[in-house]
Amino acid sequence: MIIRILSRRFESQPMSLQNKIYSIQDIAKLDELADFALTCVSLGEFATALE
Image (tube, rainbow, N blue to C red; front, side):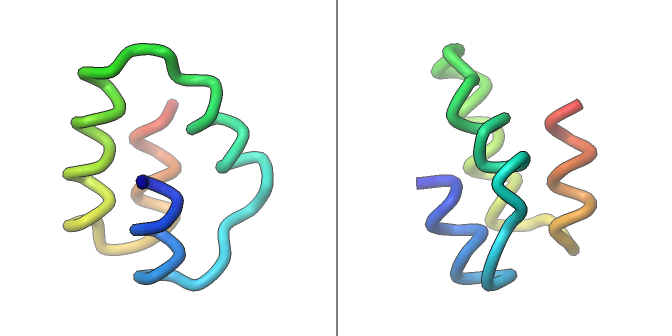
């Protein structure tokens, strides 16, 4: 769902970003990131939240 949200908001994402999202196992973290994907200003801002 996160990648779908980001695709709608910012068109495409680097494969490295998608791989980082796919590697997250923590459901609570994924929920938090999904919420942030809806409100972040840029793809770069979202990528920073993954670090």
